[in-house]
Image (cartoon, rainbow, N blue to C red; front, side):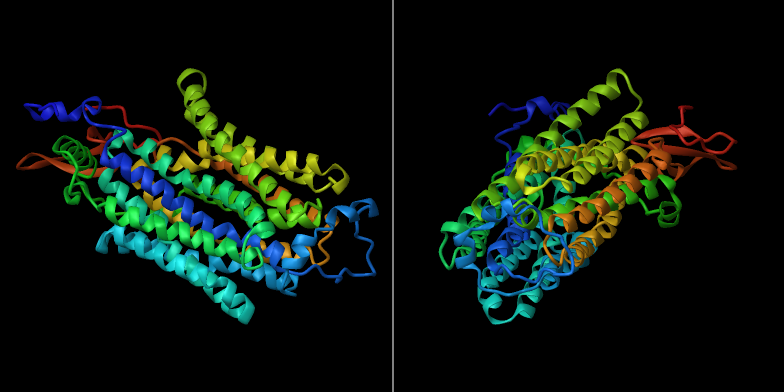
Length: 513
């Protein structure tokens, strides 16, 4: 290995191992961890379709069924033979929502626990307990519905530490120049988890062991347990603790992270609470998550109840929108960066992508509500387009916090993500209440509600989103000039600026000392 003589050589990322590095090893293992996390989260969305027996509870006073020619499409002996339970829509919705009751609890404590005990232990034990609870689901379901709900709540609690704990680990492992690439790659495991779990779960329902649906839970737990061995043996909390990291990479990371964390800042909670830019991001996040969790928990049910797909087709086709979303996220990020460099301001770019995401997704979802089972592939196409538009939010509100408050972006995202988990708790319940008869017309109302949230998010973000650096996001310090005077200056990313006598402008201070 080539040796370097002085410290300045370590500041050049090109001279440090990349693909074979330990920080990228953490990214790959972390990617697989988020795959497992989402597999444990969404497996029940498909499993419940083949767990529950078809019923005849439709209200006979309403003419809500679609054309009788679709009835043959609903006949699926595989699903009917494997179905064991007679849970109504309210009970099913309660199960789907219960995960998020636990998930919201550990969003803030997860970061604190990682800081105190290390992200490796917090994530490892969190997913280990999640995998064990998940494997108990088939037994619990055959014993008591309330035990299943309790298991899902606990699973949400233990899985909820994943994002904040990984944020904490990347705070130690990612040099600023590589942070976006490392974190975005790691978190993209969630999309792949959705895709693979939806597709494979449909096939397991039809061909798996333990009546088909039981194998979904066992397999996702086994995959997670296998992943745990890689996590505990290949990953360390910090570069200094890793037993086989090269000295070159260790110094490169420590120097980079040290420069970016040279001063611990107090959080301006009151200013954050009063910030219109923060409010715009929060509303956009909440509205987007309503659509996201409605589809994440309800898409397989819509495919079965309204579009009349059998379980084998259901799983595969439910995965298609998330394949498109993965591409959308990547393309949107690259396109947004290009437009910002060449043609548009940051503010215009953020609003363009976020408003397009809301309007496009809302329009497609409302349109999908009018598609009958006779044209069901049109419905799949519209749902795929809706989720593709949703992916554009990664160039909108998802990164907007870094624009107006980069120093506190992690704190802001934690606050927003905690509040934006509420749709995961409420949306499945609302869907169940709106679709008691499982008809296409009732699902149309569900998509009307989604369209309403899209409109609300577009209006609020369009009017109130900002990208200029917020005054409270600039650190104020006092530098001593002589024994009798001080000069108040502002510091941002190691650049020091003199504060003028007038009110601090919304944008970047441009009077450099």
